[in-house]
Length: 498
Ligand code: NAD
Image (cartoon, rainbow, N blue to C red; front, side, top):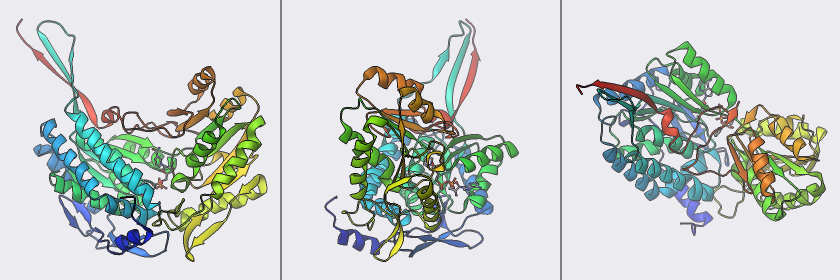
């Protein structure tokens, strides 16, 4: 698969057939208003497709379809082993259509097609498989009530789960929410980001082909302020799983209070610190992973290691290594397997990143990058950029830039490093590089984040929960813990003659 050439990918892209309707009650349909919005390839500026622009009327239809399906039990009361078989088939279908799924995300939001084909699309198949395999191996409880009483404590599906997701990993974010929610027996209404709706629509079609019954998995493309808000305010949505910015996460909490007190699970922004101590023996590995941690996916990663705290004695050596790595990762055509970095999702995000870079030129030491560039004379591309000697109070070090911009901040003691790392409104992830085991454990204990990676960055798997603390939100995706979001504890108490 990875022996596909640039020409092969371009030929496949040219032959793509996009799904553009909303997927409601098992079929594609236009928005009731008849409106559409453009899905634009940020690497070229070309319109890929005109996609149904759903609003509250379409969301009503999708939620009603989800509710009907939930109530009649076509999925919610299916034996777990049977749900498992359907979701395993979906995982197989994603693998069978891997190139297409990878291309959809690459064309829609600019990521490297090789990353989409080796990370995102196989990841989606893996997560569906993992939840499918788990669901017939989870047992419920019998409470220790004593003779005459049998109290069953079960986890039951909630009903209709709304999922609102961002554009940085379109297929994977759709998967993280829907694989666990569907495995638990819920109906799902998914709103993909307006920048990247295409892979979610194809996923819904594959789910139907795999045997997910009509109405169980619905996709309503559209804008946040209309379709997303309608899901958040809907009186018949039981749970809203959200991934996106902190500002929007706060809105969903308000929508819940203004409507039916639906559960809201926000997974929001980050400004993850990476702490490199002088006793880290493999500085090349630290440099490799620090570069990966900020430049992978153009830095458009919620847990991107965008703050690098480095012990002053090794700062110059590490920065030199990082510059070499950044310079080897210049942006190129996302469809070219030789490219090391793709396009930024859209014009707005590109301009936002460049505003931080321009301000940073005055407040910190720009050591590499800093330019918006074009590939083949067009597109939204930003060079991998590093600022050194950034003040801890600089917006470069405090705000989520969500682009390929690294801020290097020297420190003199472990206490200082931990204090600066924790001095953030965010708490999603952190990394620590040291060969001193006690220091690794001590610092990991003190970092106030959801995941600490020691001597690596961004450690993540289906088996471990992913989510944050503070204003990175409190939702958790992945692992069996994610099933807690999509189920309620239900007690059935039976009295019997003993
Ligand atoms: P965003 O908040 O702008 O949009 C996310 C989703 O919310 C989109 O589907 C959007 O249409 C919708 N939305 C926007 N405004 C809305 C509103 N007023 N009402 C209802 N819905 C609305 O975020 P983004 O720019 O798409 O994504 C980038 C953000 O996502 C970053 O902050 C990043 O850190 C975060 N993110 C977090 C995680 C995590 O797991 N913590 C993972 C990936 C991305």
